[in-house]
Length: 160
Image (cartoon, rainbow, N blue to C red; front, side):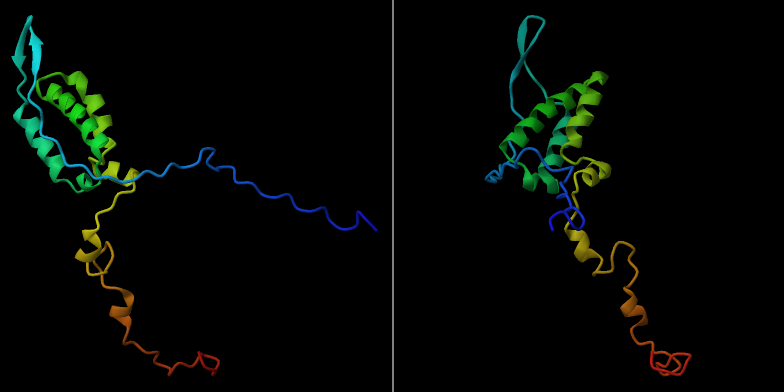
């Protein structure tokens, strides 16, 4: 007889499903460009722009960073625009600080930025000889040779 038994369970639907499919791009690593030479207008005249020394050091830091291995051409162009903001800051324009902070956070500039971006340093796994982040040897290494003093029998007289 139809209708006996519990009704069928409704199919569960993920509430956090991505509404848009992911786009997979071909990866192409790009070399870092040099900080360009260019002219700016100052008092009606074109003058050569001089990068602050601190911005040149900052640019080299990004070139040498582990993140640079994962930068494509659009990343370097965005970072080049960010270098101009960095130069503004080091020339005394403190209004550039907020934009600079937001832009460098996208590249993993601080430990908190790297954690948010789920970046980890690969060398850390080998540097601690597999001991984990605490540096303490694994329990097997510390206690591997220990044996129960009662010969492996439980308190009731049976085997453990």
